[in-house]
Image (cartoon, rainbow, N blue to C red):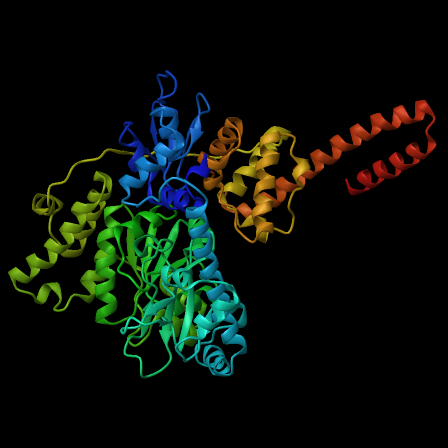
Length: 585
């Protein structure tokens, strides 16, 4: 099905199409704890069992087992073909679609753009490590900014040397055409109209990755005083839409999803600095204004967003701009105050990661932040000034998507300013009411073999990083359930290919409906395991023991048959294997 459009388009459309927004056009969804619920549209039922997960972007019915993502819903509920579903969602998200594959040209074009960006990223990185001027930049990163070689490698940081055609010359050796470099935003046409020159020169270069960790654009910091523009970024290209990309989310998505909490910083260097200090749930908004699309992207992974900006008026203004979009999608907004003269990068270098973590734990609610930094303070303002300050905050309350959140925000404002909630409520803008229901979801684990296999997979799809951090991983053939075995093998293959497995993306690529049902059932299940790393290790040990016991039984049956047939060599080999397994046990 995906052959009709390039994979990059399908990924872009899926990431831009929030499943709650889409399915709400067809179903009466109601919020229940973290998920949304309604009666299943695919079978008759009295009690709602159709659950939709916003952070994982999938649905699953506990009654009939139907499951999928936005594409499969439109295909099964609206009888659309896959290309029709892609077109429908692309139109909603204002994403231009290439012509359906008339031939291989379109697919080849985007493959070449990815290749051009990958080669450019490698070129800049090698210039940092090997160019004579790169040595000075490397020393600057090490000595002045405290950036380690590990972080430089992790984020593939590079250096664009001075000169007009370094990348142009390099690209010729890689058979990258002028048109491809231009379409990737890597070169600029000369004002005379005769030829091109490199966009990035004498700059520190940060590749910007998509969620699959492919470089799709670049941000570059000036190194020369000649440059009046401190940061220069790639223009929008067929691969890069600024309003839908957050720097660092490619690396921090897993930690944000696990903690349900995100930090927003302003600069590339801020993100790299706090990431290497062990604070790995941040994203950066460099090169563009924070948009509602950015907020919707974060909403899939987080419940709370901490704003960690510079301690200056510009940082405060940035916090205000972000808050509007974050509140409008239902996220809790908090602000971390840094001492004057510090940014996140400088603070963590001078004061250490523990000190920054302490400040994060002491973050202020957004309304506390406004009251703290208001100039002049609320009590020193005249009536008009007080009214203006309150109205600006009541406008944010009006943006909240549900009544419970609005009520909590009004209570906080009442406590801060000493004005009754009723008075504040009467002054706030009127908005459409949306019902919210809450019901806790628990997670139980049994030790029988089928549930044990399920428990391992539930933790893996909730915390994919386990495949990289856990010391004890199962083998694929430990799973008796064929669907579980296939899903686990796909996840391991992703790790071997250098990518963190994206289980939600696997939903749309499931080869059979049974695999899709199993995967959505795993993804939709919440769990209340706090120490999930320890739990995972215990489950894997039990699964290994169950596999070993079954293997011993199978080999014992084979041993009896070998003894009966008088095959001494086989008998000896089987006894040795059985003893080894028993010794392990």
